[in-house]
Length: 193
Image (cartoon, rainbow, N blue to C red; front, top):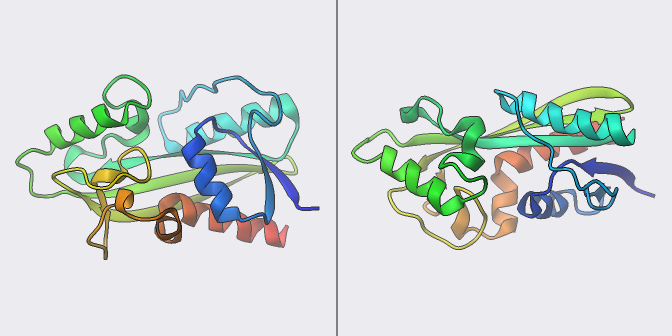
């Protein structure tokens, strides 16, 4: 039987990406699977803190091996914004169109459009916490392109590509994305555990 691991998120896009990456090596349980309908509030000031808040909440309440993840977009010319506020940058949580619009407005007339997506995972495994990080460098496009992905994917063009994350298939994105890189490290760790 594969190892069981709870992914402390209600974000179905993230669940889909991680499940595709794990590819059955680990039995991924959702919050719904364990009967948790709590929206775990991200009150940390760093990706690491937010990831830890989620994993500790699940581990404390359900006593299961689990991981929490926090990720976001860091734009050099905006002093690291939107950062930990990526999902609620324009105010309302998860309003992707408004978040993209705000980023593009703030970058108007700015030549340096360097950015990176960062993911931090807090894994609680056999009561010990371990952190894993993944990042992908790129630039912010002037106009959104593509219908795939979610969040800032339509304006993020990874280095070495001439298309955005939103123009890639999930398979393509999952080869190079920040979340994929962090999950690969988790899988490597669990294979040795």
